[in-house]
Length: 154
Image (cartoon, rainbow, N blue to C red):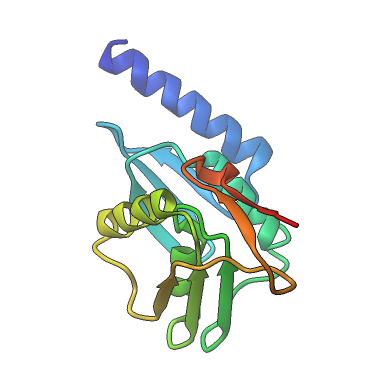
């Protein structure tokens, strides 16, 4: 795909998602495999098209009806690649964000994402643990990205 065709394609894709799908965030193509995500208190550059990630975050935010505020404590259970934890850490300023993620592959992705943003925010703590409603032994299927999961073992 030529650079001009790529720009046109990305402009159309971003415009469609910005007009019809996204309510809080706006995505634009910067060029060279980089996109800018703005809105909800953030302005970041990312190395991949994160439309689905930020559409999901809008669901967490109830389409803008809820927003992490300065001083809050936010717990991101199943943090995956860290996008929501990063967003929340930027919003809560002097508050605290705790990201729980048991999958080492997801933690590596999260670290790469934080590095692409200049490092992990100081108010963000990442813990390699999962969360379950009762004590016991669990089997964890890792290495499947957002589909990594825990299953109870009798």
